[in-house]
Image (cartoon, rainbow, N blue to C red; front, side, top):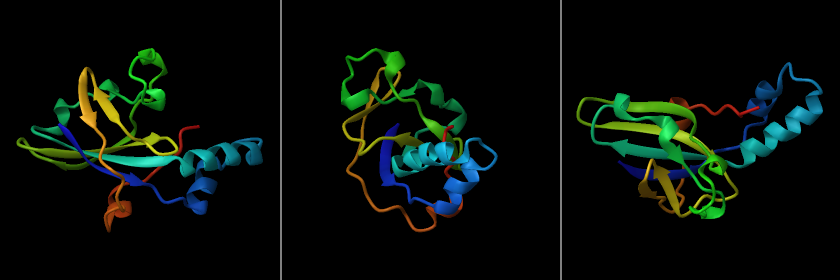
Length: 134
């Protein structure tokens, strides 16, 4: 398994409004959701084997890149997406929330170096949609 992409997710005012719809007090929730959108990064991984082999709850990203911090303080994968799946290989994506992720993502005890951020691939917003945690 390896990380093949790290992409800043584009902020969408329409998406922020949709995520905040029905929450009260609206302005407070909208501000929190807007902050999540501003810190959303899409992580794209490839895996040798079917996506069903991947346990998304096993991903962890330590705060400030400090792998000695307690595991229960680590960020988990958010909003997983299947991009390609076959018996031989799969490509999946999920979101992290950070000012600028760097260093290492973990899958159980395996270290997965994060690449330098790159532009969001053309068409990716057609395959993947972001929804803020609330």
